[in-house]
Length: 85
Image 1 (tube, rainbow, N blue to C red):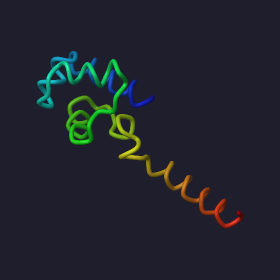
Image 2 (image 1 turned 90 degrees about the vertical axis):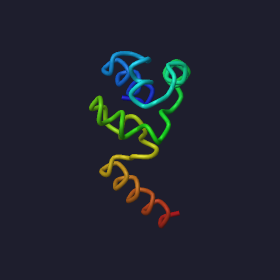
Image 3 (image 1 turned 45 degrees about the horizontal axis):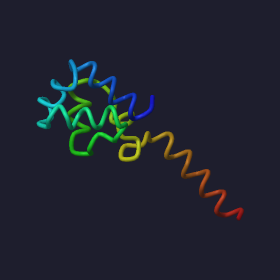
Image 4 (image 1 turned 180 degrees about the vertical axis):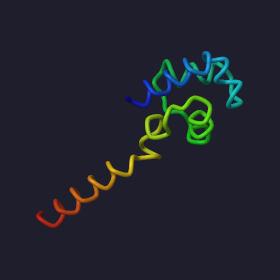
């Protein structure tokens, strides 16, 4: 699931953009911008949204919360490529 899809799913689970805004203390218009313009959920809201909806922080913001198994694989691949080059 891409981050925009994860955010849209979280918004649906919480009951819509207005409900999401109330949950995290922002306007519905802010939530609309994130969803409709496919913007990232701001970092300060990720954990609260995860707690309220069950949508993983790894799906909402993989740039901030990478999955450990993926980063371990990437790290070992990059290391071996760097040595070989």
